[in-house]
Length: 195
Image (cartoon, rainbow, N blue to C red; front, top):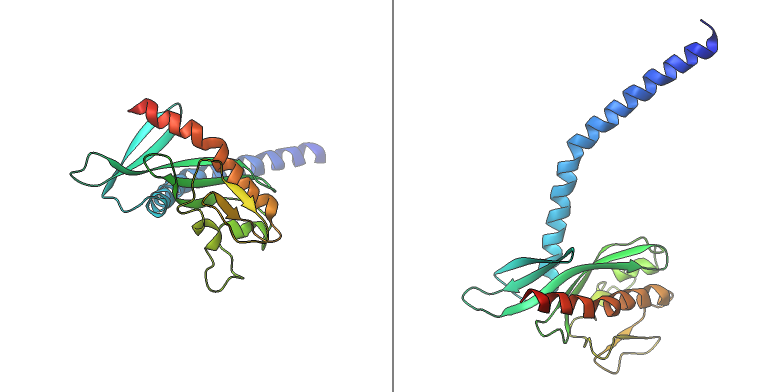
């Protein structure tokens, strides 16, 4: 047997063993990853909805809506949903909470993002703002959805539908607003169709 054949046999064995090990490891880690993903989802729902006792999950056209409710009350306190869209570097995924009439946001939590470290990542937390590192997502609480949310630069918001952009990350700030604006009517229609 020549050297080429020996190398092919050795590489085939190594590749087969590596594939088997990776497949086994995937089977071990997949349930743990899914568990932690579910816990993060539940935590995000709690962060974006007003105080609630439990939530119902409504499925509509491939979208899950989480409707927060209080015991012994028929009316919901808020609706949460996940949405995603393009940011400056890649996809931004977030959980958004709205009041039952879809007039205002009750909370916003970025779940996944790959924005520029130190700039765009401030949509999650801003370590340079020592007094309130969560100032960007927190400013969405109470913001009116209609007319559409707008972004202002280098000034404080003056109306109930304005968000202040992150300095140096205006594109990412605008992307978050565009994702919310671009999905809110669709989510409202889905929710109303489930009633």
